[in-house]
Image (cartoon, rainbow, N blue to C red; front, side, top):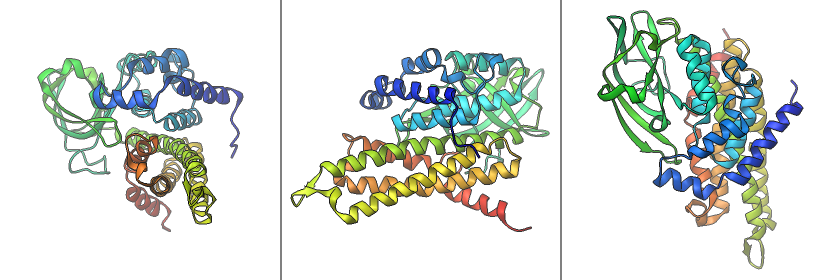
Length: 375
């Protein structure tokens, strides 16, 4: 495997890192998350028009640049390092991938809006009884004249309060189908209970009450959405793993710097051998995570079993590492580690939440075991 970045990929990484270092203030972003709209629209427009990252991994036909999984990894890691709350993975990676594979005029138009920064799209897949198993779909879509009627409920839909459009999984006569819902046009047929999550992101529980949809709301072939959803889940999981690496790199660097400054018994606590050992263990967890993310990223376009095995290995590795690195960082910072005043507390919350996105650690350990069990 080639782990070297091309010149273009290095420029992408450096440009995004510089933008975030100069324009993305953690205190301002937390204020927007807690008291404002939950995000910074001007930053999103900067992503679209100044950096072009909203189209970096989408094809030129919709205004993108035509990058691939490595570009997604680079972007997600940089966003994780800066603790960005704007919905890049939900909109570009997951929804963008689903729309691209579905094809058709509606999907193409929505992709063009995503690249331009005019649309926020997110997937509504999880239900109360489904847990990590998205294929357990109770939401129903029935034909109604030349359109559809959508009934059911989704829970913990990421970025839904910010979304202009939802991609909703529903069971039809022939299996699981995918529908696009224009939030503004839905009216009383859509009920949304929005809230802020522990890591300062936005999510919502959504009810669909005989929501009338036009015929072209169906994306792709009826009843054939599950293979694309499996790919989207693995792409999302690989992206949040890269985001976690960015978070952990920042957490480790801040912890090492703090132990150089914090004095105890007349000397920096970083000089104590026991604490040095703990920071070395943190470093090893980060490096193992980096390798796991590379493995998952470079196998996203492999056959389904190879892809799933690599992604689950990465997600399980990241789940363990995020828990360990986050907890050690908080402990080495002492009581200050969980305060709102220090960045470390915010990173710890995000690392905790990342362990459960696109399948929990336990889910991916189980899936990896199943995929590697001798036949």
